[in-house]
Length: 418
Image (cartoon, rainbow, N blue to C red; front, side):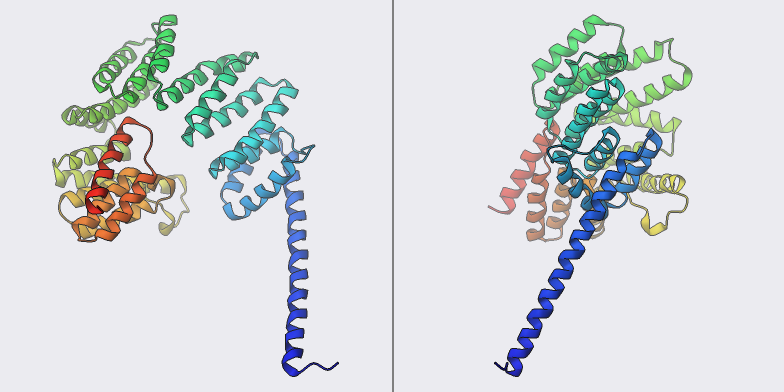
């Protein structure tokens, strides 16, 4: 039988397609074989330094590492999974960095099994610590609570015993984030009774009070913590300064939550006297003033300084970094956009707020998108504003502040899009 010219071309095209498909399948199979070898090779890595280096290398190559991780997951789900503790921990931490919670747990659970067989309290602590931190960061507080309980029920060596107070702290925080305030408070008060002189536990009481929305009580507690830190004779000068600054900064946030802006500003101004170039202090003072229509010109200067100082810090850590690779903090860009909005520079404000939303996970924030929507509305861009408010609601957290802001955004959305 003879093919027509068109028929011949179609046949040749089919043969070519089939050939290329076979080649593609062979390459894909070969790629997977190479990835399997690479995944299994991580079993040979020993020592904390090399492990950290491998994790960092994987995180810096997300495209390639996600392919490697997918192959490792297949291997890990085999009846007899092939990974030792070190390889499983590397994959667990990498999955955690990528926000891959399910596969992170898969590998951390392998770590737990391996650490149990090795009877290593240090490895068990690292495995459970990874699980707890991963789920808390992912806002899966119910899961965090359960894993904390699991760890607290372990019998183990001194390493496990030393970690239990920190795990109990995280368990209390997970309870509070689930609005189980009464249960969280009971646990905190029991801890305080056991060691009434421990100001770290007292600080935890303040944290729970803040989560509960009792800002007056939280402020009083943090004031007491600051007083105790100042009187603690066991702290050296450097430690005392570090703790004092940390709790003063937290207290400023509590004052903001309680709408005591002058007191919040006073704490931040005190911090700036000691560390005038600190990006966080400059940004926060500028933002709270701007948010309450106070000292707008000074606020803008403070926020711009925060951005500049943050860039200097990145340059210090990475001397060879190119200017175009420096990433501005989305929170600081939001602050700058907001202070410009307050000065009615709506077009400029919008540009910075859009930049803030493109800053990765840190830019995925209820308040940032709310600010962007306000800028769109001010410019008569109703469609864009509605889209931004809808996006804002996707990132509403469980804190009292976020829930209050969520209600506010829902009202704005309803008014703009009845």
